[in-house]
Length: 476
Image: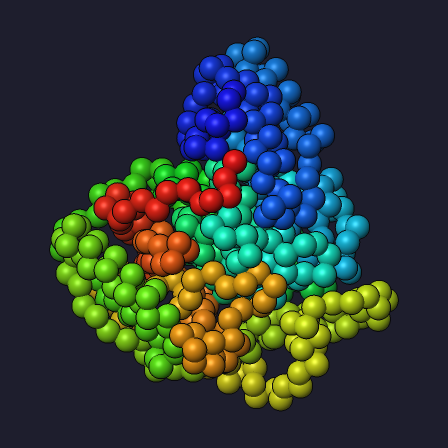
């Protein structure tokens, strides 16, 4: 297969061609690794490659196809897996010196399902250490660069997954989202990222496994989801990875959903647009671009649009407290005592903080208050729109910007829109809505409780009417 064709192919097209015998899985994989080898020295998307395992899986799949055996819905599709998600037999570092040589003996549920669907795993993608940061920096690997500007960050913590998809290495990738880590890099990299409703996509062992200090945590806020170049590919991946599993007590049935049959968005849909979050700063050019995109989709899709503001609850302090509350701090301290190796500032800061017990109970109470307020908001609309974040891509050697339009900001003030909906568990997606100074901007869609179908309908409708942003400068 010509390499110039492969990076433009959707997962749907690849699966159709492979399953029909029009192209072999090995040919697809050859093209994927040629693409990877072209851009990887520039963007540093991968922590570990799995060439040998990938070719073994490809040859086995080609043999089954030759024998006329049935194949899965992702037959022959190259995928990348975030390095916080366990992969049996493939090194999984979590971006940490503490796990630099760790090779799991089990797959996370989503990886089991991807393998069963005949996807081909290219390797593990770079992350911030343990996912404690919305960037692609750690002490093990080079910082991941954004294909739109390699001196800029693709966001994170699913940094490498977003960079790999944006650069044309693979059409879809797995990310995880404990506070925006699918949606933020999707927005900064010009991609679609979807966080399904809490429990739709099961997690195990991963953040549920107490034998993995540093990884075990975020239990009530963590999600796994797809990063893709279009909504239909993201939906296809969700059709494979979603559905209950008894190993995850949070998992819920999905019988109400046919992920790949996306219904049209009804005209007259009621939409609430929050262009800012309280008094948090936002790049004016980014806000202007998002305002234009919302106006465009409202007109084209016949939306009933109301501009408003979120409930005034200290939700970000609540989120930070919930992260600490759900992190195995004791286990991390023991692990560091056993392995006194360098770790990131985010990890040392987390372990150094002292918190009274009331911080935990206050956070739980404030979370309940926010959930209740959002339920009231959703009773008057079908979904909420926001910018996905307040800035375009920042320098890749930074954990985030320190100013917005020249105004100093607090850490993570630049991404106030995503983490609140990890606290509520609502489905949310980011879709590309334009460029500012050559860098992508994302529009976030938040649906009602378990309203995944509505989010997909809106995402597909908006994708159809918003201008295409094209390919990034670094592309296979």
